[in-house]
Length: 332
Image (cartoon, rainbow, N blue to C red):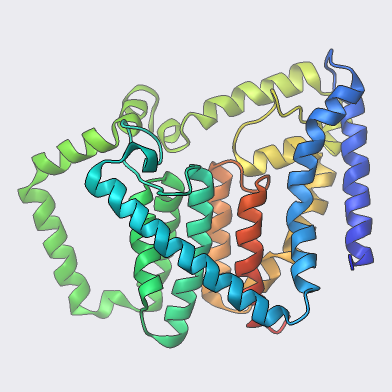
């Protein structure tokens, strides 16, 4: 059964959505705007309904553990597909194309792969911190993430690496300095090979970097799309009320930066309510452990620079399953 508090929240969000579509200034009739954007409304709120559904399942603890097991089996199979792609250069398993390194195996959509592996990584590292033991799943997910080749995953791993560096006090351990010295020596002695590898497999990134700068490269030109989209919204499509209630016409007003698109769709008022619901049903279950707190914030940082985080039903299912596992371990 859906809690009454969520029903009220969804009713307010629905009302804001309908009102925003009425006021947005386009030549498209209201009913067509409403129909076209209703899909995105459904995608935004799907995660809350999914979370409530999982909570209401009888023997939910057993169901959650079974779901986690199925996901881990799938990720092992996908690891095999990724390795086959890397070794035999199979185009079907490429994350992007021949201009960028990366193999996402059977998943095919890079945003799906990025966030699925972000949350899977949180799961295996959380278990590693608790048990101090690595498992096959640990290595499969870590290696897969590094081979998928998305900037989202690399940024996420850099952030998580910072946490683990201080958590395990690696700066006090000789093995860290030996490894660092070996890595730096390898880069110095084989610098031409390293540069060739980077230019070959990360050609698109370096092309953008040299032509448009680091921020454009790291955001894959989303910063340029951001300026264009905000100009379009503020100067052509929006009336003052839209700043409060939103008014995104996703065919044209989309930056592919998750939090900016959230603000465009819901406005200031709707965004506050949406994030409150997201905290209540998802984020708060990461608050009982320092690593989980840091990890969920790291995911949000990567989502700020990437799109499709809040509006992807496939990702939402994985998020809810992993979040439900952490919920079992929390006292909330």
